[in-house]
Length: 421
Image (cartoon, rainbow, N blue to C red):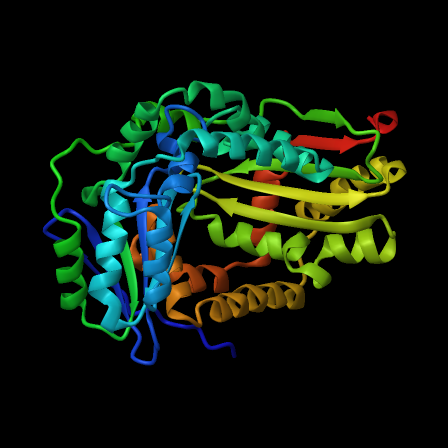
């Protein structure tokens, strides 16, 4: 029997308004912090604004140049990076306890005092990077799929949408207004894992991130309602011709419930069976191994705070486009019509729980996993129940969620030579 890793995380509210999620790991050689600011692209007044802030955050403060920041990081045991997602912006850091104060003083400096002096240059870099990325047929297919399925909204903040709106980021004041509203300790969710006391962590956070009376940016109820209400009214196919492409790239997907929905476990197992388990998944075995249609084929399930997404992808020789689309229909139809076998179901559960155990081996991974899930609206009890959710999934559950979600209208995105479109 697979041993499930238990996460002994404690939650507390700090005096500065931040939330602390503390996971003791006595064997961890370094401390790991993941600091989450809920909102991410959901707070953008201009699509891509939070991504721009992310890119500029560590490129100079009122007291440090980018070079000085890099030199200080190299002189500490500190490893630090930033990341912006649909639902949050995060600062991830690992360090030795002896460098705790120096590391947090540095992190607090770019949390509060970033100057964004490289703003205009960074806009040019973003423009060039996006255009280069969209030159890839696969990236173009993914871009138009994500943008269309989320109807140009916050969850559809992709390269082409950012590129179109870059001219609207015409003032550094726009960037700073977003920064000052989002980067507030009252917004902070700090997930820490390692061999240190919770009291010491709390004192350090409260010292370097004091209470801030500035207004805090929040996700508007109207935006939340709009995202929750997104639907695909009818089957739709969107295409983009690329006559220089030797492959056809196909995405097909359905909107799903949010990360906290009761069907999360069943959809996760369904995804593993259909295409999420790599070489052993049905799409791989049928469309690649048996029919020889695919260079690459998979399914993916992504769950966000207010919505979810399930999609299939295949890269194929252009003349096989119709066979691949039919293959998608056939394999999804099997899940709708035929209960999965007991062994296949158990193998899928072991695959999910095994990968989870491997993923949570380090303090950094635990801090990130717990903080990200909490930011998506899961309580600590919810996070702890995820393995039990997976274990409880039955063949009837798989068939039910397939019938509930995968029989609804879907969006298909295809990029390839114009003769097949």
